[in-house]
Length: 171
Image (cartoon, rainbow, N blue to C red; front, side, top):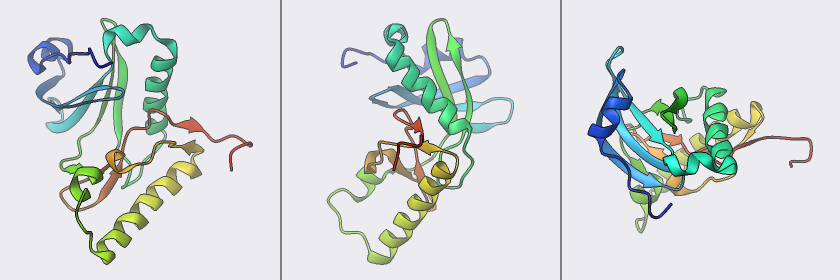
């Protein structure tokens, strides 16, 4: 996906008439993410798109769909919420809760974190993961880059692209 050039927000506005795509946020392993606004409810959202050329890759598409379905089953303070999933003109997308802030990787990378603050973050992350596990979802890619820290210093787990249902063989 290194050759993937994410479309501009203006290009996406034509595809998402119920949303105003305001700006590009980032490009990652599963596509690109944009800041948008859901017009009907006047709320910020994150719009994640899959590169059109990857929509032919059944394994990659299954991973993207798995993320959407895994998130849709979950409702927890420390897990990003999902609002919609679909396909437009061969481009797959997920509309998610927008989390203002930065990833734990960029927030704490190279800096000492207060022990009490670290303990609270770890406890909240564990609560979010426990909620996912209670709903038979295994994240499989927990790392600082997949934990967003919002404006209230609350961790939000994102990127369930490698998630899978927990089976009897999982420990």
